[in-house]
Length: 286
Ligand code: SIN
Image 1 (tube, rainbow, N blue to C red):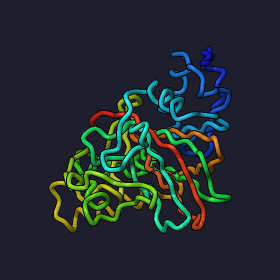
Image 2 (image 1 turned 45 degrees about the horizontal axis):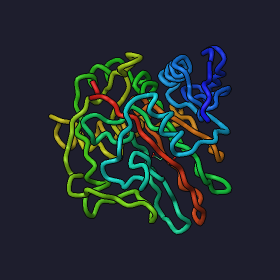
Image 3 (image 1 turned 90 degrees about the vertical axis):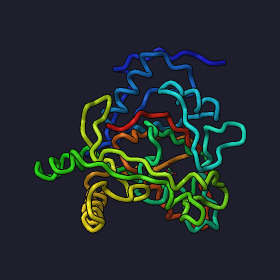
């Protein structure tokens, strides 16, 4: 039986977890049929804090999907096989023998799409005894920290993104032994996005390049593009722009792909980790 949560937005406790971004949200059971006021309160906290962590949630796949749909249409990963019963749901699994893990490098989800996902919602099912944290880097704080001259130079630039290095045949795919890729023949396609993205809800500007999928800056010589991209990619993930989520079984974290990069640490070799991921469709970056 589903119940309706009538939540006064002021009744949700939002506690920041770092000086830049990320917050834990208490006082809400995501398995219930949330009312519009509760969803609006979560969305507002999401846009403000970029990364929201909900502890002690007991969610079936269907309940996680229903929660995600309150924020928009769900996406299906173009290059990784989804769950057999729910194609929009990715079982992100690392098995003890894996030497690499899905998401094990700084990236923003699916920027190789014309309309990359607005956000991702990850639920912890099974965790190693220790480790397996996820790091997040605030791309708006990284942009704000640049000099006005650098910001002015970047504002008009456009970058090329592709899934090729990860998902094309022979690519260095981050999948683990228990995850399967698909459509590798389509992965080399390129798309272009602004180097600096304006968040459609907050109006804040943030860097929008990442090491996994951004290959070059349009209109620059290769050496110029390489040098500027290397500077930006290093700057964008500096420790001072990050927060870190330590998972417990039943933790759900949702992050705003329009304002953060993330990195799934693989410091638990010999152990299994199973997360369920869904993603909400986004718009064309501007
Ligand atoms: C991902 O990149 O979506 C996976 C994050 C994680 O497993 O912590």
